[in-house]
Each structure stands twice: as structure tokens, then as C-alpha cells.
Image (cartoon, rainbow, N blue to C red; front, side):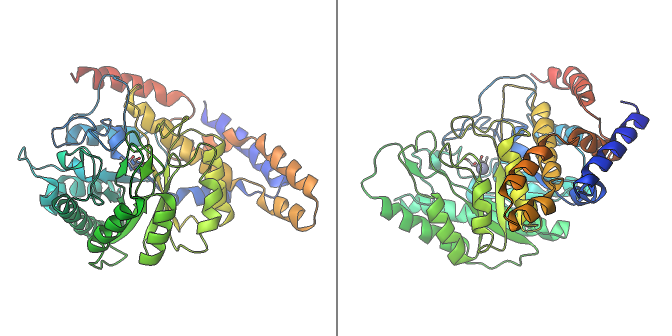
Length: 421
Ligand code: RNT
Ligand code: ZN
């Protein structure tokens, strides 16, 4: 689309939004400051760089065999740099501990050190992209029976406690290196496929293990810890130790962040509704923006009802600085760069859409008891010329407008991805 066209459409949109009391320029400026943490694990189907190559255990699964998956740290970095040119704004990069680089030497999870992540730290620094971090409690022989920190085996627990402690140290080092906090998100798969005899025992073990991991204090400017709850996984259908209630209580009592993943609840339960329930109690929250299709399937995020509802709740509470946004999806059935670009553009579109809500008028209608007006305004807002504002955002960031980015991905697919065996 010609620049003049984009401008003209934007001016019209600005007027239309203006009639409903919405300042599109202010919304675009606000969007500038919203960073999403982009998951490294979409690049290689959660394979990691330890030589395992695919997820084992943990109850999560990447399906599909689209060619061209990244096989090395360099390939992940190359793919991310390319994808970044198609995503407006400056974002963050979310690394898992299994993406260590130890020069071909095998380093077990209880032995990892900052030096194994130096490539990532240097690269991120060079790009100006802050890192976030996650310990990896799956794809490991010591997680094969489905238990890690809540295992009845003390040796297994100790191993994973050491992993968790080291991850916090690494995360803090990343935070120092980038001059701003590196979040450290703890998710572990622990649970039973079938009916447990003792639900409480494992929960007590998990508390004990986590308390040991979190006993070392770190400055919040360096690292902030989060714990991620879950309802069920493959092989933990009947019971997950770290359920939502467990982690609300745990995170509250230990002053940690709570992570809510959009795919970790009952199918009709949504995290958008939970945000305002937790914000009064938690100074900071983390979200794993994902798209569950009938189960925790980790489909690529879309500009859909729930994603926009999540962003709307943050916008209404003006809590952008209190909610860390991370995406969590892994689809191996489509071009993985497309997955990133679709998911990130959709997340940002959803945020912009939320910022463009004619909030004041809707609130006024509610306060004056005109509930029909409240409903009507929410409906009218849906057909405002949102696309023109989004296109302007892309144009200002010099990333392709509309479907133009696809051509670039196709070229990259032919020139780079197809040559990877
Ligand atoms: C698993 C959790 C977790 C993982 C990543 C890879 O159900 O959602 O966040 O997806 O850590
Ligand atoms: Zn998640």
C-alpha cells in the first residue's frame, strides 16, 4: 500500500475514533512501550540445544514436521533477527535453560552456569533486546516419571532444586548485564496420570523444594521470579501438583509473581476474567498468552476474542507496567517464522485494539445506569476502522504493512530454511 494511502486512511480513522473520544495518536504512543517476551522455543519445537532434539516428558507436545527448524543457537538467532524485522516495536526474548551453549560439552541441568548463556547475553545486548529466562523441568531422564521438585525421591528433588537455584543466579546475571530485570518463570510438569492416593503429600514436597530455591534473595532490578500453574497435561490428566489455587497461595505468601497461561484452565475458563481479581493482590503478574484449541494445545496466538479481552483488562486497569506479557506457543506444522510473526502481530494488534476502546464513553454509560448504551458502544467500537490505525503503526516502524510480510518469509524459507536438513 502506498504511504499516502496509509496516511489518508489513518486520518479518516483518527477522526472517526475522535468522535467517540478516542485519541489514536495517544494509543499508538502507548503501544510503543508495550514489550512482549518472544518465546525462543517456537524456533525449534521446544527442542533445546542439549542434543535431545525434541520434547520428552513434561506433558507438552509440539506436532508437525514443517521443514527448516532451527538446529543451533546461531540458527535460532538468525531466525529471530529475521522475524523481528516483520514485527513492529522492540520486544524481549524468552529463553529456556535447555538452550544453553557449552561448546559441545554435555552439561547437566544441575551444572549450568552463566557462561553457558554468554552467547545469548552478548547477542541480546547487541540487539538491544532484553532477555527473560525459564528453568527447564522437562525433557530430562530425571523428569521421566512425571515428577521433579515434588518427587518422593530426595535425590531427584535435590537435583532439580539445584537447577532452579542456578537458573535464578543466571537470570540475575542476565538482568545485570542488560541493566533491567530478567523474569524467571518456573513451570514444572509434576502430576499423576491417574488418581493419586495422596494429593497433599506432593504439594508439601513442592513447597519445600520451592522454598529452598527461593531462599536466596535477588534484587528485583535483576530478576523477578514467577510460578506458572496448570490444570492438566498429557500424563498428568488426573492431578497437577502446581494447580492454580496452589500457586495463587504460594506466590502470594512468598511475594512472587503468578503466571497465568491461557491454556492452563478448564475450556470455558478464561484468564482475561482473572486479571482484575488478582491485580489488587499482586504487584506484578505474568501472562503466557497462548491459544488453547480444546486443550492446552499451544496454537499460535491470534487477534481473537480472548486475546483482545486479556489486553482490554490490562488497558482498563492501566496495568501495562504490572503485567509481563510473554507468548507461549509452539507449532511445528507451519513455517516457524510465520508462527512468530502471526503470533506477535496478533498480540500487538490485540493490545492496540484494547487501547482504542472508547473507554470513557462506555464507563460514563455504566455510571449513569444507561446499560443499553454501554452495550451499544461496545458493539459500535468493533467496526471502527481499526485496521487503518494498525497499518499506520507498522508503517511507522518500517515493517511490512498487511500481507506483504509473507513474501519476505517465503523468500527466507527458500533461501535459508529449505537448506536445513
Ligand atoms: C507448559 C507451560 C510452559 C511451557 C514452556 C515451554 O504447559 O505452558 O510455560 O510451555 O515453558
Ligand atoms: Zn506457559
